[in-house]
Image (cartoon, rainbow, N blue to C red; front, side, top):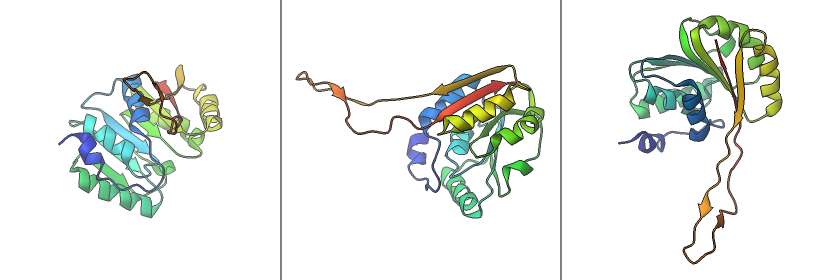
Length: 187
């Protein structure tokens, strides 16, 4: 069974980070199978589980402050069968640990945690911020510039096409194109 088959079983609560945005994080960081990852603002756990699938020799710890959302993540972890995910029902501001290869954040106020995240990353580690709003990315980038050198903001837009062999090819008329922005920095 592929990850896509497993993901179909997951329950959604709050808005998720889509695979196309998660893939940007993976491709821009070079995620490796043994990485130690921290996901702040776990939501429904889709990003945590996407990462867990790709780090079978590593780990993913996710912090989610809302109890009902943390329960959704825990249930999705059970459905996935992954043993390398730890769910902590606490505010992201209270995260603990160091030596992370990757820290991801999808929550309001991420800019307030930039210094703490920088300290928690190992040298060469990555920090990726997701948000559907460019203003949040701008606030994070302003703070990130104080401690990180390489910072890049990306929007990934995908359009599905209807290809008609009779010559009427065009984009599918109604689809979700914008999902969010990802800002990635390296320590």
